[in-house]
Length: 85
Figure 1 (tube, rainbow, N blue to C red):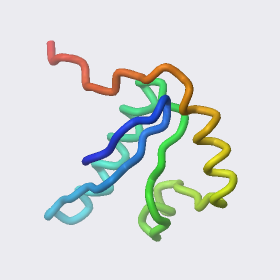
Figure 2: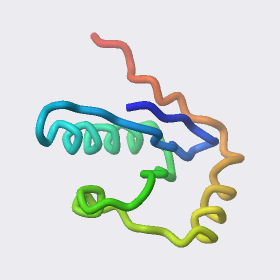
Figure 3: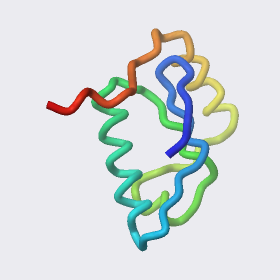
Figure 4: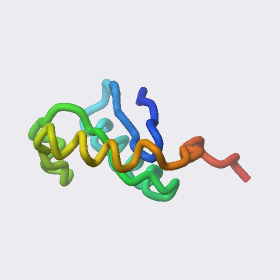
């Protein structure tokens, strides 16, 4: 996964996997991680069927911009994974 944060919004740029269904597992794990880190908005990129099957919803551009503006001023979250025990 490659992405960046703006305030409390995470923007996915790309993810890659050569194994079948590994991308789905990666996205679910990332969603859990972002939620635990307190992010409020996840820009999942363009709508695709497999994303919709995971609960992603297409958002009108103006609604997305309003939501982004509402979260971009929030203090950024440390989205790095905590160190292993």
